[in-house]
Image (cartoon, rainbow, N blue to C red; front, side):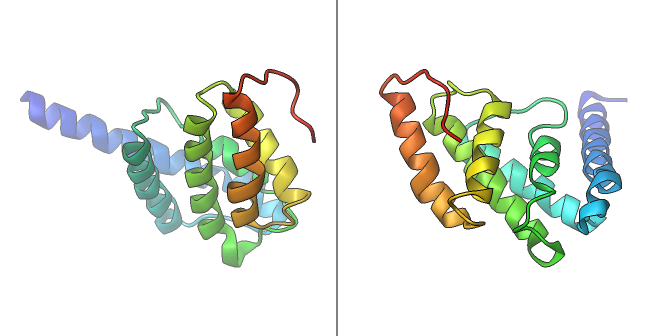
Length: 151
């Protein structure tokens, strides 16, 4: 087997693993009335590839999506009809503010901050979360703030 064929085989196996991992989140999220189809998972995977390229980031293993799914699946503002679009937006917002925070926040801290404010003052508004809450928070971080975030 030549190197190109081996690389292609490994990439296909990685894609299949990624899709399987996303769809397996349904076992947990179905209790909240939301789930991803294989087509949804494939769309999320493509959006993930695009956003990682856009922000010049790389990920290993399952990436941020499973964590994002588990963090937000019990949201009172997410339901089946907006689930996929909301996940795509949250993923994009996450990577934007991961960069904007100069990687000073752990993934878990950023996800938790996003969830607290999405459920709280944002009342489910992705625009308010992105343009106001996270923008203000990351400005503080870039100015050297190292304290606990306010919930």
